[in-house]
Amino acid sequence: MEQELGKNAVWANYQKDIADDHYYYCRSCIRQAFLPGSERMFLHIVGNVLGKDIYDDPKHTTCTGIAYHSDLVPQETTATVIARHFALMTEAGYENMAISCITSFGLYTEILETWKEHPEEEEKVRDYLWKATRREFKIPKNIAHTSDIIFHFRHQIAEKATRRLVDVNGNPLKVVDHIGCHYAKLFPSKGVGGAEFPYVLAGMVDAWGGQQVDYPERRHCCGFGFRNYLVMANRGYSVANSHKKLESMKPYQPDLIVANCPGCAMFLDRWQYTIEQMEGKTYGANGQGIPVLTYEEMAGLVLGYNPWDLGMQLHQIDVEPLLLKMGIDYNPAGKHELGARQLTIPTLK
Amino acid sequence: MWGYSIAKSQSIVYDQNDRTIINYVLEQEPSLRTCMACGGCTSTCSAGNLVPFNIRRLNTLLQRGEYSQVKKEIYNCMLCGKCTIVCPRGVNIRNVVLKTREAIMNSEKSDANDTNAI
Image 1: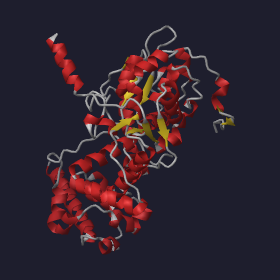
Image 2: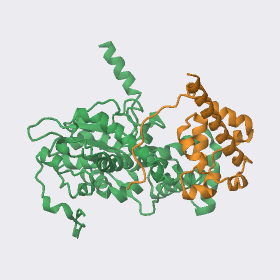
Image 3: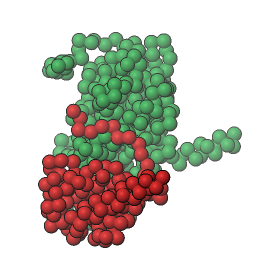
Image 4: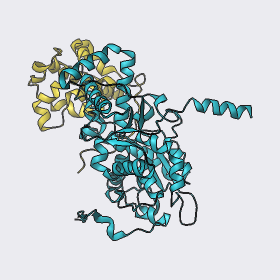
């Protein structure tokens, strides 16, 4: 009993404060380009399903993260762009930030931590921002990644769910959770569970009836790594990381991978195609790939939404075997419809 | 087709690698120690534009004591010396190439003598 209390006491140190309501939303460049359904679904779940106040500001821009981590933009510029976002949040009357991208989340945290250690840098950036835009800002009271917010409300989502993460026979789906490195490896106290025991996605899996898969390379990077990917000659290092993870998870026969970083979701998905083309190897059942979902897609499925409205037809790895396994009644013909628009149907040449 | 392949895992054990060639080159051309791996030499290299020859990568391989690729590429240099002109650290790269060739020749001679002796 005492030992249990001790464990709970230790675990309490690995938690973070997540605001309950009134969020200023910061969009993600990668998600808007490659996973637009997830951004839309996050706003829908928080605003309409959970009934929270969230502001999607059209004046918000990139955080410069990709350019910053590629050495194209100096830290002062990035800090000033982020200071402008804080100013937009202040002007809109919000104090809690909901950041959609893991790169941005890491970068906002990095800038705030830099200012804590070097207040003169904050003064300098305040001056830059004033001279450039005549704007002033308050430091946010709470910064949460959007996966933190879905995690925070995971039990409410479970109450409203029409499906669970189980197969047609009621057996839990085996889910690999993949946490973006910039979520908690940079500043462990800023993530649920810290860098060692991140629980942000595993908590959703537990709450929605799935089964976590623990495997040797669970905490390994997906390999995106900015310069690893952006320079073509380095891409072998990027794909090697995903390759290592996929090799490690394959014996556990996962049904799906869920990621909280847009880069990870994209690369774990796209690199499976690359590896299949290069080496003829696949990692899912029946010679197929392992579907890679965002946490909004996973939440959307348990809430009963149409997978094509979630944007799951835009994945590289086909999600239909997963939908069939879960017994989801979906319309295969609707796969290439996006609203009133018809998507181009891929053809083999 | 891809322009890259899946990188293989490797580890470099400096203490176990043979550093005979790089030690000889550094002794003969100490300016190489000031290289900061900017790659100016490689970007201006005429030979490198036409055939596999990347002086920046060769320096990395030399420093690691991994010579097989160095031996394949080092004779692709035309000794034009443009790399030496652009080097911001004043490394005499042309001489580095000459001394590397010399060291490789010496090591091959010594290997041949060892074989004959056996």
